[in-house]
Amino acid sequence: MREYAPAVTSFLSELRGVKVRALVWIQARNRSTGAVEETGFWNGADAQDFVISGVTRTYYGAGALMNVPPIKSGVGLNVQMHDLTLSGVPPEVLQLIHGYDARLAPVEVHRAVFDPETAQLLAEPHRLLKGTIEEMNVPRPVPGESGEVTITVATAARRLTPILTINKSDAAQRSINPNDRGREYSAISGAVGVFWGVKNSRSAPPPTAPTTDGGREIPEGDGTSGQRR
Amino acid sequence: MALTFPLTKAQFIEKLPVNSARLWINEPRQIDRMANGTILPASIGDPVWRGTITLAPSRITNAVAYEIEALLSVLDRAGSSFVVYDTRRAYPAYDPDGTIVDSYAPIITQLAANNREMSVGGLPVGYTITPGDMLSFTYGANPVRRALHRAVTGATVGAGESETGLFEVTPAIKPGAMTGATVRLKKPIMKAILEPNPEYGSGRPAIVPGASFGFVQTLR
Image (cartoon, rainbow over all chains, first blue to last red; front, top):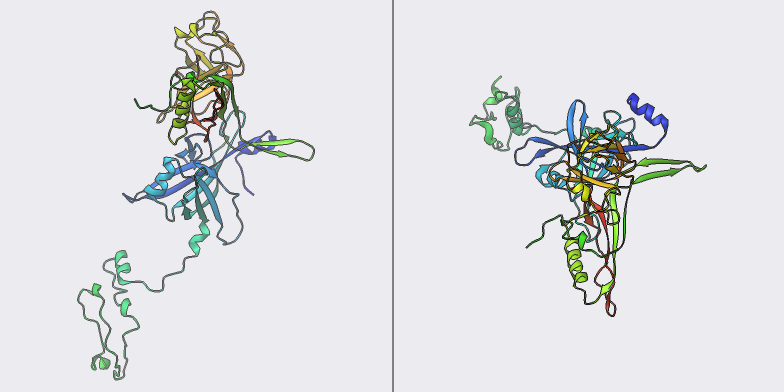
């Protein structure tokens, strides 16, 4: 069960009307600088700042966030998909679509509870969903109808679904440590026969050396190497 | 000269021969009704002013009707907006032609923490905000937001004081409103966008039926 802040719990128990808003926070990469930049949308009236985990975030309103679906959650490793709907008109949304690279960008959805009488925020917004952008559909609307940008958000369990790569290259290993030669011959691994204590009877021609090899010779069976030991 | 948006009062709203007008504000709500009739309301959006205006019919030779049609077609576009005031109640009840407030510069002096009450200063002693009076002020930047409110409770500038007491307004005052902002009591305005597809352009023998259109407040 979710634990609300004391102010929210006591407010909800009074049952005198609810004013709840959804907040969506997206951390996307700037296409021109590569830096991670953050943008937020909420279904309130205007741009407003919220302090979340000690950081002040600006959420843009005025209809930018059209709809937040019911958030599904459950025990287990199922990946839940949620479709958030934004209006395609506000400049902040256009910046997200065209200015930022939102592929796999982290998304957080918070819920803010207000007192409907005074419009005061009761407690720090609590988080409902944390995930990454899976898809972003930008339709071209029919004249006179609304064109809504749908963002599909996958929950964090999506990270568990990519399969591991079967091969790792020498270049990948060198990007970790340029002196690490552990995968130097991985490109030809399995293609070159290694003969232990027998005469080399291989008939296939040796494979081509990878170009990143720095001119080192590939050990190949030349009739004598088979007798090295 | 090209028009700039929002169209000012003199450019649009003051030209209209208003036949009937409506201006209202309500909060979008989810309303769950229990079997015994109890209503459980929840706010699902913030309120903005909406309105409709129907114009008086005019003679077919009247040039004003055609000028308004041209303006409506300009406003029925992306990017255009105009300012609106309540054509029924353009002035405070205490000051029905706006002559008193003309020589003063009212400002917001207090904003209560409950976002529902404010007080106005810079007014002469005895000046009264009557329940139902409209007032507007601006806040924020880029773009400047125009807030339109209506007094729910009244207040008067008492003897020896320079401001009214706190009085309640509707809708709730939005975050960003600052004390010191200039208050407009005479023809208080908001920025509005025309609802798509206004009714205009028809004609009958010798008569142009009045155009009718709706509008919605915009904060942008």
